[in-house]
Amino acid sequence: MIRQLFFLSSVFTLLPFFVSATTSDSLRERYIKRFPDYFFIWPVIKQRSTSFDIENLPNKNEKLSYKPNGNYGLGWGMYIFEIGFEVTFSIQPQASKQYLYGHSRVNDLQANILGKHWGLDLFTQNYNGFYRTDKNISVPANIPYPQRPDISTWNTGVNGIYVFNKNKYSIRAAYNFSERQLKSGGSFLLSGTMNTFSLRADSAIYGAKYETRFGAQADFSKLDYTTISVAPGYAHTFVFKNLFLNASLSIGPANHWVYYQSATASKHEITLNSFADFRLAMGYNSDRFFTGITFITQARNIKIEQVQFTSSNSIFKIIIGYRFKEFGILKKRAWDFVPIGKKHSAQ
Image (cartoon, rainbow, N blue to C red; front, side):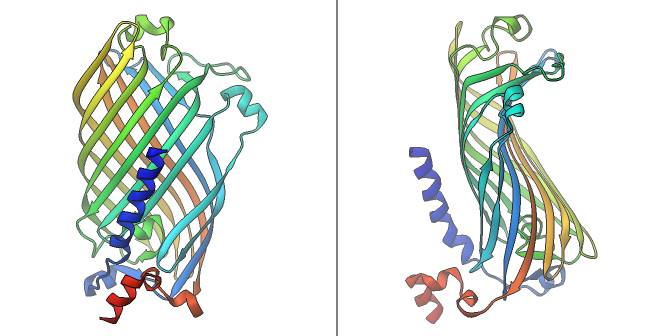
């Protein structure tokens, strides 16, 4: 409950800052087109997921991956009053998929706020039930993967991006279509994260079978860590008529405050490792019709004895939308409904 309250309070605290950030620039108008007189509607197919890997650092061919069974959503989105939002409803995996990969219970709440200079992803995620894959052992067809319904993870925090050249690069054009990139352009950026991650299991995470390969001390059943990171990077959008391809990558150091507990060890550590933020988008964006595919993933690496633990959260999304001319009350902006915003506009 505390995580959800922290998440919601962060959204409402930060939202007015980004909604009220409006500037105009003649150079920006040559590269980026806004749609202040339109509202947008789009259906969306979305997959959100949190997974983690355990890799043997002396022998990188030894790797275990733990994944939930799907987390697909179907819904719709809207950009109205100059605020974008999406609502999706989970699609349960088929019975045959649950037989192979088990059943996962998911509570995944996310919000994305995009300004001209800034982008924020706020999230709180709780996943229960994972299946395991071994890089060196393939599972025969129609045979269930090793399943761990007892594993639960919690991941709460915020990822941020600061774009230095807002006049030639629009993060909005690639990821929520509230703008349109007219010419190819890019920008250096800073990406960062601040989050807490917790894992609980009824027994050791990989068990005695793998201790000869990964070590006994890292065979934990309880893990907590907090991460703070700032990573430099670069983003670029390539435009050909109404088609676009966008990619951004940031990699940098991350400081982790770690606690883990196994049968042979219980330890608090402060470690320095890495954080990576990768985003890819492609699609079609005209004055009225738009469609696109988006993939976003963030990964945090920590070292426990001879093992590297990597936690990843990702979003894969497909949308198709259309812009409609505003009319009536739809011509208003979000701050028009706030008494403080009305007073500010009058002045």
